[in-house]
Amino acid sequence: MLPRIDSIKQIRLKIGITQKKLAIMTGVSTSMINQIESGTSQPSYNTAKKIFENLAKLEGESSSHTAGDFCSKDIIKLKPTNTLHDAIKKMHELSISQIPVFDNSTIVGVISEDGIVKHLADVGEAQLKKSKLADTMDSVPPIVDWDTPANVLVPLIRYSKCILVTKNSKIVGIITASDTLKMME
Image 1 (cartoon, rainbow, N blue to C red):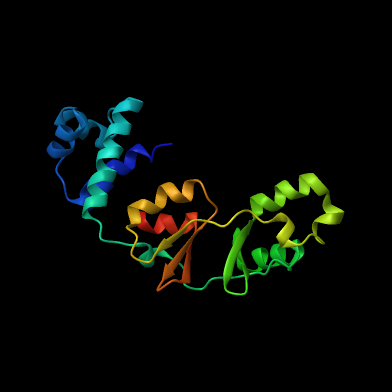
Image 2: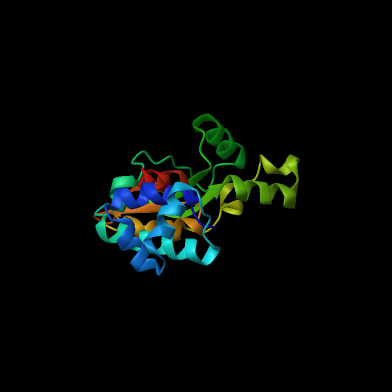
């Protein structure tokens, strides 16, 4: 899925390139880029894809942001012995959709709204609240270093519930899909 077409101009200006440079990189005319940005012409899917790929490449080159810049430092944690009821309650209280599960200081998995819904379909509501996280959690999420470039994070978050961030071999932050949206600001 591509970003919205009307974001092209905003991204291009943020990066600081001209319509002409974007046109050359994409293989279309400067006039076409102007028409797309003004909303008078809609690009084909392939043209839009090329534009966004080039913008992402340039943005990655110009970005010095790292995982440490975007992670939430306040990590909510649960234990494998906690129940799904504990997880559901904590998610509702804090308006979050996933919680890492730690056995002492070792990450052992993650519990997510999606995982809870899947488990509900398997065991039914009566057993759901009594189930232990150890029996229902998803596998350990990706773990990246504090200095990992921000452009590496988006592909990771597409396939996992969250990303944990380490600094000096200690988990110090968490990145969720909503945190990756901060990169667009």
